[in-house]
Amino acid sequence: MPASPLLIGFDNPFMPASTFGSPIADGESWEGFSNEDLSLLAYGNAIRLFPDIFERMQKTAAIK
Figure 1 (cartoon, rainbow, N blue to C red):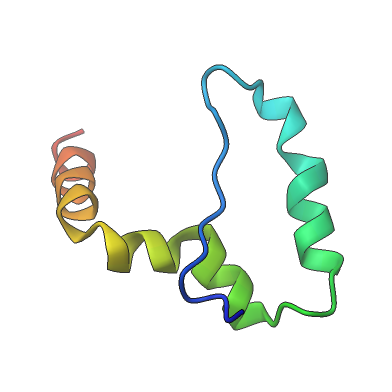
Figure 2: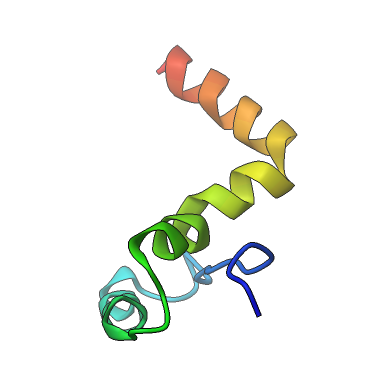
């Protein structure tokens, strides 16, 4: 399966941020993912799949 339909996510704030490192490191160390794949999993696919949410987040960040 290509990385293009996959997302990575964490149940923040229900899952403490201290638990994020290990799964991220596991994904980065797996030889099946390229650096481009990791970028897609981390944020690229979410931006593509949910452009309206991304746009609202950008506007909110600009206000702060």
